[in-house]
Amino acid sequence: MSKLQIDNLSFHTFGPFDLIVQPNQCIVISGTSGAGKSLLLRAIADLDPHEGMLLLDNQNYLLFPPTEWRKEIGLLPAESQWWYETVEEHFTNIEPAWFAQLGFDLTILKRKVSGLSTGERQRLALLRLLINKPSVLLLDEITANLDSENTVRIEKLIHTYKQQYQAAIIWVSHNAQQIKRIADKHFVLKDNLLTPAR
Amino acid sequence: MGIIQLSLTDLSIAALLIVLVVIINLWQQLHLTKSLVISAVRTVLQLFAIGFILRSLFAHPKFIWVTVLALIMLLVASHEAIARQKKRFSGWWNYYFSFVALLIASFGIAIFTLKIIIGAHPWYEPQYAIPLLGMVIGNTMTSISLSLNQLTQTVWQQRSIIEQRLLLGQSAQKAVSDIWRDSIRIGMIPSINAMAVAGIVTLPGMMTGQILAGISPLEAVKYQIMIMFILTAASSFGIMLALWLSSKRLFDERQRLRLDRLLSKN
Image (cartoon, rainbow over all chains, first blue to last red; front, side, top):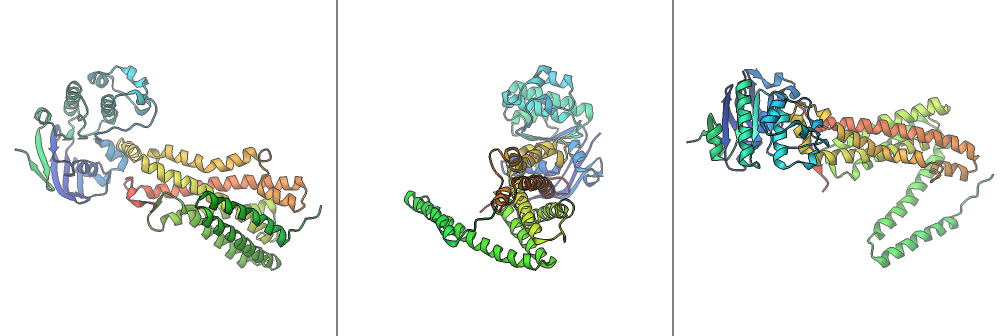
């Protein structure tokens, strides 16, 4: 059970924003580029300096060491980054069922990162993030570069994860079809305001 | 073996070689003439100045004057260590990092060498203290400069990777550990190379000087071995200190990467 509460959050020239994401809830945020969606996710993950309060299950984020907070709040950016040569060096643990759900067999672990497609990297980056079992998922246009088959695979895995771990999810997406499939609530970020989409 | 003294005419003949280089520069339009001439003039003025200072310091060895000279060397080296950095910390931080690292590493090693290894009396005997400190500070300065440049440049280039690692719950220290190791390696390469080829490819400067001054080659070798060991140790400690201080400044108390604290040159 994880509830994320955002109170009066402001960063750079954006905000203040208020938002509550309940356990097992997926909130989709859309908006034009430059509206501050990615910066909002970065501020929630405590990656950029910000004002205001972040609460996880009513606990102030400052009570968490930064490393623990970021394990609880799993942010997946639009473009994944890799720093070791092979895939398996980036994984501290694996969940074989999740690999299968995204269409991988475990031989992918032996592959070199440089030989992977953008789509493969993005799917593996999600698996790498889920290893930490985050209570909250912040997903920043993570399927923008994927084909429809892999997009649906990712949506299904995240849905399963959300139910299994009662995770709270904020998903930035522009794809209208996708928003229909995944959103429990949909907000639009425009002119520094988060307003419910009609 | 006596020493052959150099006259002003001898120095003028050497200076003619620089004039020749300047002529070639002008002919080839290499646009180096100005800096070449200024550097050559600086060499003459600076070395004669230090020559006169050392001559009077050797005649009247006073702790306070040795300290003043050492501090001037330290301040200049702290500035030079950061002068050619492509990315630097805003404000006085850069200067502070190189100053503290140079102060602790160079002075620590130099005092240890003077007191324990050489056993000079008094330990600040200028004939030993000043040349030794000069070599240690100069060498450590180069190492710190190379390492800091590598650290700040690579962190800038790899910011997305560092942030991705932070997002997976890694500590700031872990997220830059590879960059940290590379930066130490870059700073240590000159010292390690110098030790590896000493005596085969190059006759190190201090040893050459002692041999030219008439000291027996074996005595010169013993001094040179000691110098190379302490230079490597001072570089190593200086690098670690400078990198440690800089890394702390690159992240804030919530372990966020703070590239806003870095400025680009120009």
